[in-house]
Length: 261
Image (cartoon, rainbow, N blue to C red):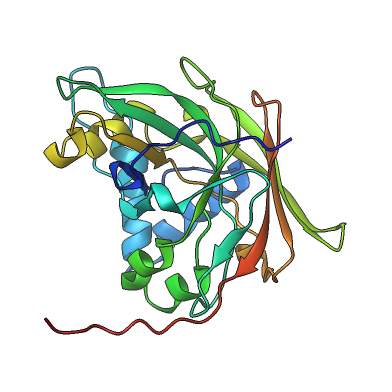
């Protein structure tokens, strides 16, 4: 049995994949490590400054506007992959790695109001070697397919989401680590992330669908793991009953050329 993603669009151009990062505190150990690094480094990186801004202003008081997060474009509906389908990395990519996340799914109503349909388990697949080369290449590193689990969680997301992310190679676990999500483990509220995405008028076009990835603090890449074609990414987390599984594949090389009218 093949399960489809919980959302799609008849015209893939009207489904937008986007996301945000540096939104999760991670474990207490990871949080302390980040805070110590920020305090000890006289010239923190832009990423560290962005993280600190979220810690200080990502959960605003009622009636106030929180700090805006990092934001990136990921693709359109043609980049959306179902559980069980391969995540295909382009031939020019330097890496293909998992990002276990929760994604919000939205439909823009006839009057331009964003309506959240629910949440889904997600793998925001990215090229971390390219991103590491220069943080200004983040936009390039994110232009990759992404996978959604088959279930749609309705209503509010539980504040403390706990899951496991693993990589299987030849049917054996190569790497495995727990991951956290939900607002109890984030430096931003979901509402703040939504506000800063949908404040842009082009993102409120009636009939469009949005899938917005909320970030993670857990990557196999951070532990020195390099995925290979055929490896299987497996992500599971309550309250979702079914895991998200996708094998890594690499597309044939292509060299598109621009022609002149």
